[in-house]
Length: 446
Ligand code: HOZ
Image 1 (cartoon, rainbow, N blue to C red):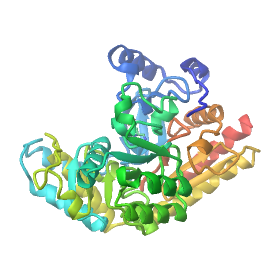
Image 2: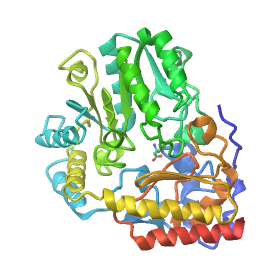
Image 3: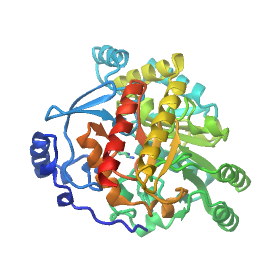
Image 4: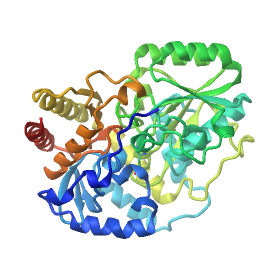
C-alpha cells in the first residue's frame, strides 16, 4: 500500500543543530530500555523524520517547553485536544475540584449526564451517547453496536483513514501505521480483516458498486468526515451525498469518526459544516479537555442496543471518570459560551496561505489543505484526495522541513500524514513567526 522511503534515526544528525537537545536524547535512551521504542504511542517516535523525540517538561497556552529548556510554538496540541491552549486555568480548576472529591467511584455521577447533554446538544444526529476512555474504544464499540443492530458482519473503511488500533480497523490504516509503513498490522488475523472492505476515499463509484453487490452483508461504513490521519483530506460533496444516500438505501449504519473533527472544525464537527447526519458518531480528543475521555452515540434505536438497555456488551471501569468529565464538560462549556471558531478561521487562513506561499515562492511543489484550525502542507505536486495521492508526497523534504522548523522554535506534527492543530491561545504574532520560520527554512533549503 505504501511506497514509504525508510528514514532512519541516523538520517537526522541532531549534533549539527543550533539548539541543545541533549537532555531529551538522554531521556529517550532511558525510555528505550523500558518502553517499546521509547514511546507509548508510535506517532510520537519521530520515525518519519529521523532523530529522537523531544521530551516535554511542561506546556502553557500555545507553547511546549522541552527538558533542555527550549520553547516551541505548538502545532500538535496533543494531536488535537488542546483547542483552548495548554493548562487553561478554568479547566485545571475543574480538574482540581473534581480530584478533591475522589478520582474514581465506579458508580454513576451527575457530571456524566451534564457532559452527555452538552454532546447531544452539539450533535443533533445523536440521541444517546455512551462515554468511554479513548477514541479506539469509541470506534471499536460503535462497530460492535452497528453489527449487533444490523445482524451483519462486514464493514467498509477507507484506505488512509485511521480509527484507532481496533483490530478490524487496522487495515490500510493512516496515522502512524501509514507513517511507519505498516498499514496492515501483524497480529490482526485474516479472520478479523476478512470482514473489512477497504475502498478509496472520495471514490463514489466503488462505494456504490460495493454496496450494490454486498450491501446485505455490510453492517457499517466508517470514515473520518474530514481526514486528519493521512494529512488533512477533504471529502467532496458528491462523496458525502453518496455515502448518506447509499447507506440508507442498503440499511447500512453510517459512522462518522469525529474523534479529530468533533468540536474542532466547528462545535458540531464536520457534520455541522457539511449538513450530513450520520447514524452514529464517535468523539474523542477535545471532548475530554485533555483527559482520557471519548464517546460514541447515535440514533436511539441503534444506541438502545447497548447493554444494559440492550444486549450488545460494552463496559469500562474508568468510563465517565469524574476528572475526565469535569475537564471535558468545562471545555465544552467554554467552547459553547465563547466560541473561538471565527478567530481560529482567521488565524488558520493566515497560516495556511502563509505556509503555502512560503513554499511556492521558493519553487516547491506544495498543496495546502485546511478546514479551520486543522491543516496539512503536502509536499505534493497535486491535490491530495485519497491515500494513493497522499502517498506520492515528498517525505524526505517533509523530514527536513520538520527539523528546520524545530530549529526555529516551531513544533509541527512529526509526519507528513498527520494534521496540524492550533489553539485559541495562538496569536497573530505566533502565526507570523511560524510563517517567517518556514520562509527562512525554504530559502536556505530550496
Ligand atoms: N492518534 C494520534 C495521531 N493521529 C496519535 C496519538 C499519540 O501518539 O499521542
